[in-house]
Length: 112
Length: 111
Image (cartoon, rainbow over all chains, first blue to last red; front, side, top):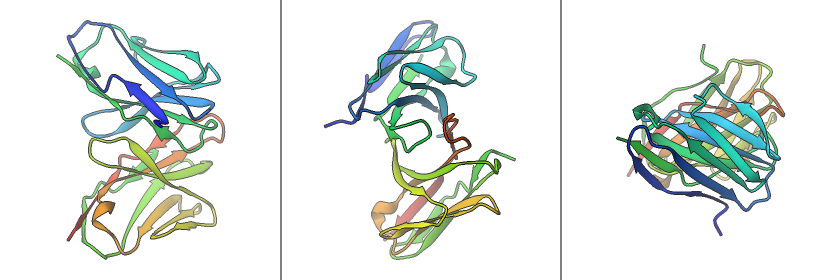
């Protein structure tokens, strides 16, 4: 059984479009995260949600908005995509804030 | 000084060798520490948590040195399958989850 799943795995789109990436975890964890890994492989946290409450909002553009319909899901919506948004986006979850994290397989986003 | 700093490598060692990585952190109040490994084009996976007293899991040993503000990972009897990028992770707060990933150390094991 997949613990943390993301869809889609690959996303190719034009500049200016709006897109969403979905994430689901079946581990019963309280906290979920979104990370961006750029071409230099640096992994940077974007958001985390704890029991549907945003507890981190790093200095990411407001074109990025996390949406959590319930504890098991944290989706990422991106408006007006830019070339610099091209990266791999990872979803993760942990039992509690700051504990060890389990990552999804990643979504490779390419903006043309 | 970066919040979390790692030697990017690559470390290229023969199979069977012992290899060690260090990771330094700037916030002396940091609460929890982890080592993850990431294979090429895959997601990071937890390798081990790092406890104050040090901990061992098979061929892997992790240690924390609070006085000098670094954590270390020692791999004994390295295998070809150990080839990966090793990421150190530091959580400055116990509950605020401002987790910081290092940029990773690339390890390549040669036959």
